[in-house]
Image (cartoon, rainbow, N blue to C red; front, side, top):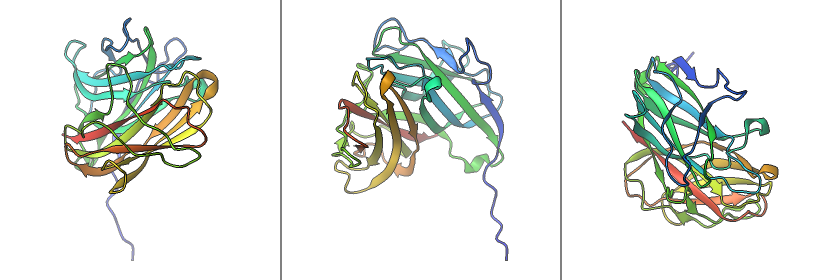
Length: 282
């Protein structure tokens, strides 16, 4: 007997800013303001969108600098023009993102609903004056079973500091052992249906080591650990990183204590930090 199952949602629309390189580089250049730790102006990533979008890959490159920690956070927004933008994803980490020529970058693969008829925008901030970066986005929309795809209206950051363009300090365990759990903030402000994580370092000289990040829904990581959701690899020659994220699908109420742990393949560089991201249904 053959068991027939419904087909998974197939996307009928794809749009990207990676198909028309400018200055020999892909993606969109988003300059930071002259001052540090303040938001830049909004820059359009995509033209007016023809169909509702549900899934994106968002990555950063060209952030690293030899002998320095170049921290960067990025907001995404939607709106008709740069004067009328609503934030839909806050403080995505792009710190120390490697150039694409060195196998970058810091990569977020998140679900996020963007309605048709609007534009997708980005703005950044950095701890380094005039730290430009490139933001890369590829988006999928018009699924044939839209009702089966989660409609995520907002990505909320937890544990970040826009005053210093960083996250919550956390100590990594050495040689593959997860370190002590560290609580991040006071919980999400919204009920979320999933959670992700990103890792950064303030070290001015990075060792060629890798990191894994795990999330839990209590302060000690003994009640419910949600799994490994972040892989982070340092490229020591340029103080640059490659990082990839997944997410844990789970309902977490607003105000729930959240903690994170990090392991290192060798000896941690120290000055490590983390940011969590909660996915809010529309």
